[in-house]
Amino acid sequence: MEVPNENQSFDLLINEKKLINQSKHFLLDLYGCDYEKLNDESFLRCTLNNAAKLANATVLNLISNKFEPQGVTAIALLAESHVSIHTWPESHFSAVDIYTCGHNMRPEIASKFFIKALKAEEHILRIIKRNPPAAVNNQIRKAF
Image (cartoon, rainbow, N blue to C red; front, side):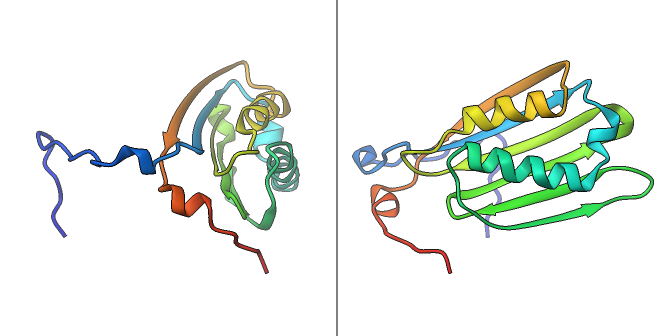
């Protein structure tokens, strides 16, 4: 596998008509959050689950880990992709990742929910539009 150097450019897809820009990847940094909430694994699991449902997603599984002396990492595996959170309570900081695919997804609402639930004083939101081929979005898949 070749690793590109920093001066190398990437070729664009020639047939961009096959891309429909249905996927959104939200990177949300939350500052000045409530320490107790950032360190409460159960609360964060519920928050992830609720945020995913507000985004109109189907939660398939949810896993989490509490660290010592503080901090939590949790991820909700979605039929439509994933939602994750990493917390640093001692710094009142959290990094949230919301990746949703499909026409009916509402990651904007999930982002607002995280900001409120964690009582963030400030936040930075970066939105990346992902471009899977149209064939990917036209597939019918069922979660078991």
